[in-house]
Image 1 (spheres, helix red, strand yellow):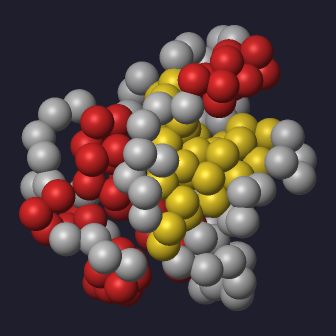
Image 2 (image 1 turned 180 degrees about the vertical axis):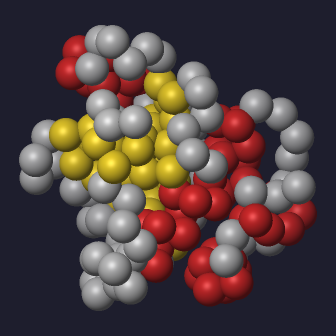
Length: 139
């Protein structure tokens, strides 16, 4: 199933408005699916949201080695991650960890958060402005 198909109708419409097509769906590991299905798309806008600020998300087409090195230096105990996107006009870096969780590093406070346990949860939270600021260290 497509990553985008699991989104809320509002978020899915945002992807469709920037050129996402169901034909981009592939099978494989989650990072590869993100890069293939949505890589290169900039979706949404930063501004007022439902519970907090909504964000734009700009998905990468391929892994960003410099981001992996930055993350490893800042959070060595987390383990390997894959950088998948920037959000909120570049003030949030999104990563995918080995457990399939979407992690957000925010520039303003230099903290790590769990933005979602699935692609749909993370993307809907960011694009629509639902609360996502659950600290990485919290249960």
